[in-house]
Amino acid sequence: MESFYLVLTQLEFFTIMVLLGIIGIKIRALSENSLSDLSKLIMRLILPVMIFHKSINGATRTDMIFCFKEVILSAIFMYGVLFFTGFVIKRMFSLSGNYGRVFHASTMFGNVGFIGIPLILGILPERGMLYMALFTIIDQVLLWSIGFYLTLPEEKLSYSSLTANIKNILNPAMLGIFLAILFILMEWKLPAILNKALGAVGDMTTPLSLIYIGGTFCFCNVRRFLTKIEYYAIVVIKMIAIPMLVSSILRLLHVQQEIITFITMIAGMPSMAAIAMFARTNESDEDCAVGAIMITTILCLVTLPLLAYFTSY
Figure 1: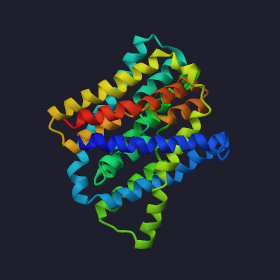
Figure 2: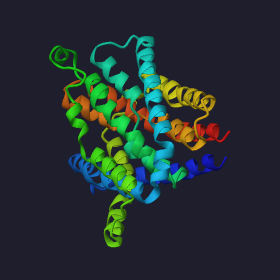
Figure 3: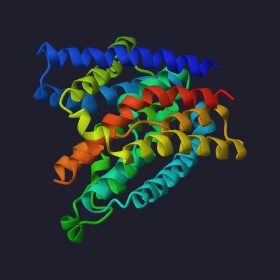
């Protein structure tokens, strides 16, 4: 039950930060252009710094060796289930073309960076960031291969391949992860003043990410997406049923309880904001991704506490 109340507390905090983002737009302290710049700042600097800092200060080499195999294999299993789930839901609602492809990607990938990391740090403060660093290796490889490929419009598929964007895996977040793993394995420590400075930068990740999410809500036509029943299928199947299924199977396989809690919560994340960015870049169906992000992010305030209650038992 402890994790249930921790998640409730975190989501109350999240709601306040999201509301501040909305207020920021209403009082014109933020604009659509500044939100775009804020997203780049978070993804390219603040988030990588936070991943690096939290990992090296929250885990030892023994911890990493002890959990490496279980986290990696559990992440691969989770994404295998989610890929199949996206395919099944797409077929259930007869979604085709670019809309169906982007919908598949929105079902498979969750908002780990903006919502997952702050939430995991709240419920697993000691080793949660270590699990996240290992998990993100699999997450980024699949996002920049399968995720990016699914957001390509059909007219571009003839001259693109699934592995064409592997080079994009070498991004700031992955650099932060690999540096953190190196520091943990070598048992290196940062000078105190540098460690404190990086910690201060990393601590900005959660509020800025949630303010960004709140701001983006102001530029979405909520009514336009409310009637699309396939989005609610993502909520019920991907964000509730599949995490519970994955959790039950991992229990049968005697995976560590902390890792089960971690994977269960990550599997239940709302749709990833990066899918909308990919769709925009590739000139595919961006609106499909925006609708999925909008509906799933709002309803995760209900589904994530349910998952936390489930994992408590």
